[in-house]
Length: 465
Ligand code: PNW
Image 1 (cartoon, rainbow, N blue to C red):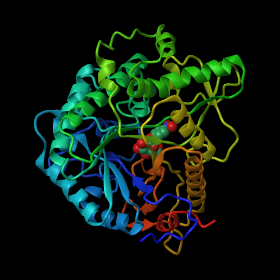
Image 2: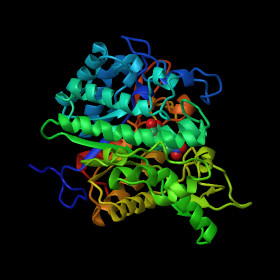
Image 3: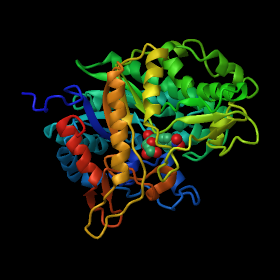
Image 4: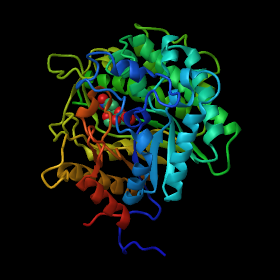
């Protein structure tokens, strides 16, 4: 029986969920045979993480998964999206799988399924085995083949336990932040190699999909998650419009076009000509990358308001991305309220983005696989985190999701980043995105007010007014 009150706004079966990633929550980095990843190396390099923390323990989810599954069940979201740690499943990125790693994920997903939570798994959320980085990392073509081998093994071992499989999370960050900007592991600042990394991530995605399709179990769904950062020209001046086009090519279309249309944008190749040629793309690669997708996950945090060169191009944000062929561009803002990371709160941008993908591509069903906000908040005297700002943020974005549905977008779900506070990459423990507060000293988990708010939204499949 449909227990939703009449007139509630969301379709029955709408896919509410939360997301996490292996390195950000698991800890236990040297337990049960896990090998080192680029994030272990990077976080242990002085100066790389703003507060000097590492993911050595993070949320200790590797040991506390039962408690975390109980919290998922209490929340009542039908989906939980998480990633597999490549160095836990295939330490050193060679040979067969580590049984203890496989057993961990089996325990986790079986417990989730027992509680009615559907696992949505990502094969790669940035924790590249260090050994592969030592051999050159994603700028090397071989890394794509190694990823495909790992993805195939993971599907073989866990395919009977998990129905929804994603190849990559945000290849944009893996390529540009890792290899051009240097803010993420492995911390290299080599613009041309970031473009090669992007291609090999694309290639690894296509190869992995081919392997999965070859042994697809009935009812399984395969996809990818991209963070598409809308590149909006700050004004209609030709300089700003052209800058926005260049940034869009190098951040968004460099992934969307090969995956969804089987080609790289001609303007991207032309823009990059002064930096590099495209001889790393060889015949047949684009056919491999252009595989059918059952779902396209979109991570949305904010738009990029792009300005052309000039003295008022403020905040030369993401210098690496800008350095990569986007030329001398800047990033402005719209004067909207921001989170504690300085990210503008712009739910309309999410709706516009969903329209753009729908209009420009023959896209599969869309899912918001991440959306959320960072505010550093500790429990008050009553032991509770009253995170009204996060509730307001989520409320605005859930309403935007509803608008998108009303406007005809084939949007199947909305996942909050994140289930719990976790190791926020270069920001370490200083940036908190969770619906659940984590005390990193005691590992005590405390649902925030936003957890209860989201639980209520899910239960009623809508908003109060
Ligand atoms: C995503 N940016 O990363 C990731 O998928 C998560 O692992 C991460 O915790 C979450 O968003 C919050 O940061 C991003 O600089 C990292 O614009 C950086 C940016 C965007 C997304």
